[in-house]
Every structure is written in C-alpha cells, then in structure tokens.
Image (cartoon, rainbow, N blue to C red; front, top):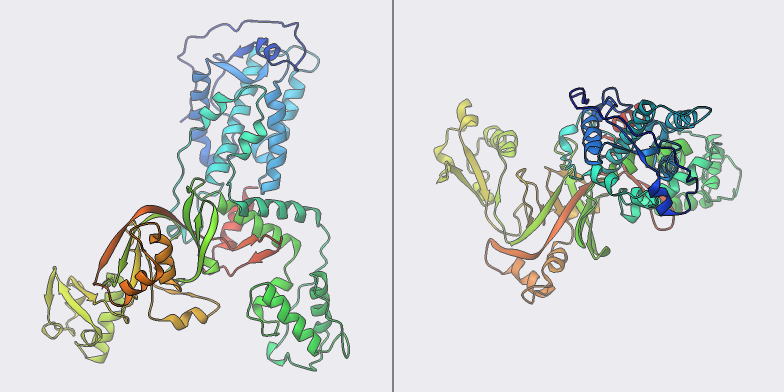
Amino acid sequence: MICCFQNCKKRTAKEIVSEIKSRDNFEARKALFFTDTTQASFANLLIKDKFFEKEITSEVLHFYKKNGYKTRWLYQEEPTELFSLYLEVLDKSANYGLNPQMYSRNELSEKVTKLYTNQAPSVLQIETLDRDITASFLLLTKHLGNGRLTKLGNKDYVWKRTIPQRDDVEILLKLEDDENLIEVIEALHPQHPLYKRMSQKYIDLQKDTIEIVQPFEFPDIKQFQYRYKDSTIRILRNNLKVRGYNAQAVFSEEEVDSVLIATISQFQKDKRIKPDGIPGKKTLYYLNMTYAQQRDLLLLNMERMRWLNNDLGENYILVNLPEFKLYMYEKDSIVFQTNVIVGGQYTATPIFIDTLKYVEFRPTWSVPQSIVRKEMIPKIIAEKDPLKYAKRGYRLFENDKEINPDSVDWQNPNVYRRALYFVEAPSERNSLGLVKFILTNDMSIYLHDTPSVQLFSRQERALSHGCIRIEKPAEFAYHLLKKQDDWTLQKVQQAMQNGKNQNRIRLKNKYLVDILYITAWVDEDNNLIVKNDIYGFDKQQLELLKKNL
C-alpha cells in the first residue's frame, strides 16, 4: 500500500530561524523547532528491502501522524544529534553481519550534508529526507527483531518461526534528542551471551584478510597410517600449525609419525570430534576452513539468533539440533544438560518455541498415522503376520474402539483408508521409554525417554521420527519437578520403574522450550565451534542472505 497525504489539509510550515547554535544544553536543543511534514508525500520511500516495503510505508505514515507531523531527524538549520548517533548505529551494524548500505547509510549522510551546504534547504527537501531516515530506522529495527531472511529455503516448512510483536514506531516516538540511541538499538539485538561472543569473533575475523590455510584432501584416506608418505602431509602439518597445533616431524615433513597422529587426535578432541587420529572428512572440514568461511558461518548463525525469542524468562530450555544437546537454564545459568537424539533428514524435528507443561510417567504411545501407514501396515502385509505388533504390546483401534488384529483383512488395498491406529502399552520397551515431557504444540512433537540407549554413543544422532529423545530423562524430570511436592531423584526413578501408568504431573513452573538450529558459535574460550548441518540449511540460507547484502 502506498500511503500519502493527498487528501489531507496542508498546513504551511513555519519558517523559523534560530539564533541558538549550541548542542550542549538539552533545553537549548528542545528550543530548536522541527519542520512540519504535511507537505511530504509518503510514496516512494527509500526502502531497500522490498519485503518490508508495504509495512514500513504504513509505519512511517503512522509515526508522523503520532509525532504531530513534525520531522524527527532534521531541524530547519541542521541535523539533530539523533541523526549523528544514528549514523554511528549504522556503522556498528556491520559488527553483527549487517550491511550499513542496506539502510542507505552513505546515501543519507551525503544527502544531509548536501542539504545544509551553501543554501537554506526548502521545507519539502527537509520533509522528504526526514521520512527516508525514518524508513531506514524502521527497516533496521525490523531486521534486528525479525531477521533479514523471510524465506528460509526448500525446507521452509521445518521452521515454525514466531515473529515477536513489537511497536517500532513507539520506540522512535519515545527517543529524546540527547538519548543514547546506540544503547537503545543494542537492546533490540539478541541478548544471549552466545550472540555477543559471535559478534566479537566476527569483528576479529574481519581483520584477517590474508588466508594462511591451504585447503586440501587426501586421494584415499584409507592409506593414512603410520609411516605413510605424501606431499599432502606437509600441507596437513602447516594447517595444524596455523591453528596452534605444532606436530614436529620425527622422520620428514611429508611422512606420518606418532607425533602427527597424537596432534590430530588432540585437534579432534578440542573440536569435539571422535579423536581417532585420522584426518577424515569432518576433521579436514575444520582444518581447511578459511577465514571467509568462518565469517560466513557466523554471519548466518547471528541471523538465526535474531529469529529466536528475546524474552525467554528466567527459566527456559534450549535444544540445539545440530549439536544434539539440551540445556536447562535457571536465572540464565545452566543447571542441567544432556545429549539428545533428534529427527532424521526426512523426518526433521521442527524448529520452534513452545511451553513445557506436563511430565508423564509410564506413558502409552499413540503411533502417528504417518508411521502406521508408511511402516507398520507394510510390515504386517510383507510378513503376513497380523499379530506382529500385538506380540510387542501394541493394541489396535479403529474409531476409538479396540479391535482384534486378526479381524482385519491386511491384504486388502483399502486397509490404508481405514482409520486404524496403534497404542503401545507402558513398559520399559515402550518407544517413549518410561517418561515423556509434554509440550503444547499440535504437531505431536515432545521430549521423551527411549529404550534405545545405545544410540547415544553415536556422534551423529539425527535418528528419530521428529520427537526429541533424552539421554538422562530421570535427571531432567527431577530438575523440572524439584521445587514442587517434595520430588527427589529417587522419587522420580520410582515413578518411572514402579509407579502407576500414565501418571501425568502438571508443572507449577512452566518452562519455555526453544528448539534451535545453530551450526556455528563461539565458546567461552573464544573457540569457533562448528557442527554438522544435519538438515542442509546452511548453503541455501547463506546464499539467500548474501544475495541481499
């Protein structure tokens, strides 16, 4: 929608020439009069992100209406102090992977300088430029609060983003001319320490313009063993050395020795890779990573941090899917963490925010229809065994009525059209284990125990149908319940092993659960941690992000 004041009654702007030149005194600044903007058109605003064009055009109009149609950034005689601060804000935006020119930084600065040079500007010139600065400001707040990307690639459906409701116009209306705009804008950034460390690392990497790593790969990694000789071993040693791992050669620079194998193992251990001393695909990914690639990963993951809820409260739970890890926070401190198993590539765990409301001990499992039709019925048909799942503790229902599996003609093609569903009885073998943690979403996604504990020994754990399996379910339940009804770890374990079936406990303190997809971050020791892009989002989203830089 293109907004303008074509039908509004125009008022003549007062031509005021002030003798006050000092900006040191706030009252003196307030004495400088702003210009009336009712003559300005609100069509064709300077907005470089077309996705937000309609929304920002409407907000700019709304702002000037609430501001009494007065300019905000420009006086008749000179720009406000607020505009100078805004240029500083735009310069600092580059530290977070944003491009100041997306918000017309240089263009606005040059126009303002030109406006007040040589001759007195007209009212219309001031009005038009002021509204473009406002449009720039509102676009910046949109990008900080919502992120820049609106389409997230071919698997867009996996991301269930909740856009926070915030009145950006009100932020601008409340700003005083002498207020520290930089601090106001900083508050719009994600406030998690992770984001701030990523930003600082990004700033540091901007200084590293000369690449000192030489990417390489082995023709056949199976040949890599003690006393193996190849010219690539010299490159391997160099790439380790520039990352702070000096593998002094025992025989020659181009020959594998025990020191090199031990150094590779230490590098792998520090990068949280299986320390086998063999420079496989994942190890070489780290060793070959250039400064440019590191900057790109931080650029992308800082953007993803902007998609998160910035107000999780004091108690919350973060699950980072690529890391296969759950973190529980109380008053912004980690009180519990555990490994998790997440959805596979074709059954991805959605990325969303939800509320954890219940803990249920000894649950049943109502098998999702997708599993019934794609896995269970085909197996019954193939094995010609109607009782296949009944033997394992599953009951069969149709239209809420339990039926005998032998009464179903499984070989009839119409069996797929029937409203059949299975319910697995509570037991240690139950697919949900002995406890599940119930969220409020309508996707049947929750957290739960699992009988397949051996899977937690794997490095890559994208193995489930979409739900999140917990390695330490009893400890997790204890931390959720410890502040109510005298729950102890022993009491939790008893409820799991010997308690009543489907014992659902409502949490008195609800926790927000944020399912994240962060593939690169910076730890407290300033090390860049990179995880496998398990769902293949990085390349697509980075291309989309850089396309509009």
